[in-house]
Image 1 (cartoon, helix red, strand yellow):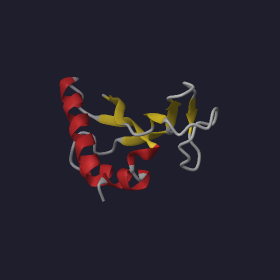
Image 2: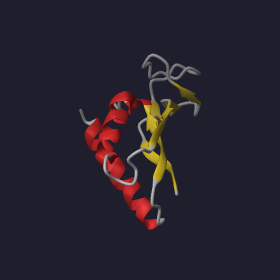
Image 3: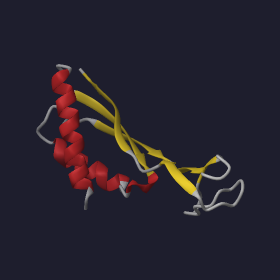
Length: 113
């Protein structure tokens, strides 16, 4: 379960930012997760709750935005989302495509007091 390692890194970032911002309590953490990041949201939620236990983020809500996979065609410059893992341009049929979103994972915001 690589979600535990991801949760540990996430909590490290959250606590560092909270310390820099002089927060005494973290109430919500908003993250963006690409569909191709191989993260299982339910497992990440569980790992996050285990990892924040005993910290100022102990009861923080983890809100996850799932970012769809978006491609750009290298032949016709069309941008489109993929469906059913078909990496072919829906405009011209080219297989020369580049992933432009859907693999990322980042902290969007941290809320607290």
